[in-house]
Image (cartoon, rainbow, N blue to C red; front, side):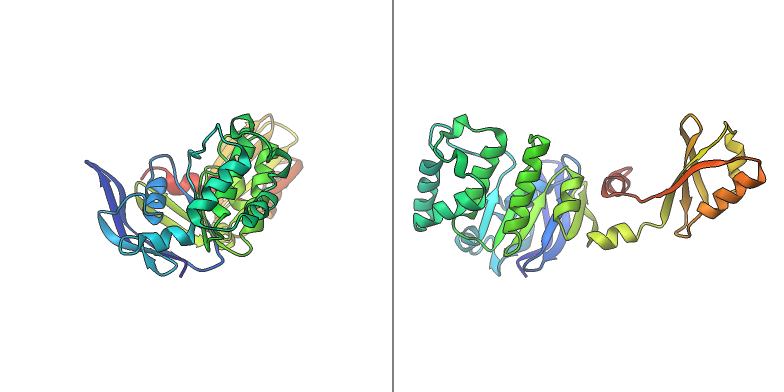
Length: 300
């Protein structure tokens, strides 16, 4: 396993940040690590990168225990922290040269990571002159300098505009072809575009750990959007079996949620016909990751 976490707990005073957390990540997986603010994501990432110690449990990266062999862990991990620490007065190449000396890697590797992360057009500038997106690229380039087997990325796309999001996403997908990536983000579209698997943490506990495709396919609820040709009373819809809720979103458009995986569009159409209504449009809406995330992290 690239990452192994067994019964990890961590508290800050009376606040329990992690509560008996366990999971493993296989080599080559790209895993999205999701949770609300304060759920324990950054704490776990700091434990995996040896910045802090857990109170209980054990963790290893590439077979190296984070407590017993921290140097080996640091050499096998590329870490991009949530608040990307950079020396703003240094030029891009100068900063990468400094880190190359720390990791004792050849200077030729600097040009490789500059090209890999798309830094070439800005590589002659001071870091203070770079946009947020390019600063993130510098952080990624630094994390990749020593060619680690595992990348741990904490909110790598925070504060980026839509164009920068796409660019950084492509960088992560590209480097993830040959590495294990453990990625924390609040942007669900990024997870859907990049990740193979999703782990959701809430209040310090794992509440979901599934392949992304399986997580979406396991949803038993279905949502149907239907537009009638005239206004109706909500009571008319109560005869529909398995109906969980009916929301009049606008004008004569209704969003109907059913607790079943059986397609209910024919039932809605039959109801309209029986009551002298016409269906101007009817469509089946799939639940996306954002909706699943809200369900898993609310009322807990």
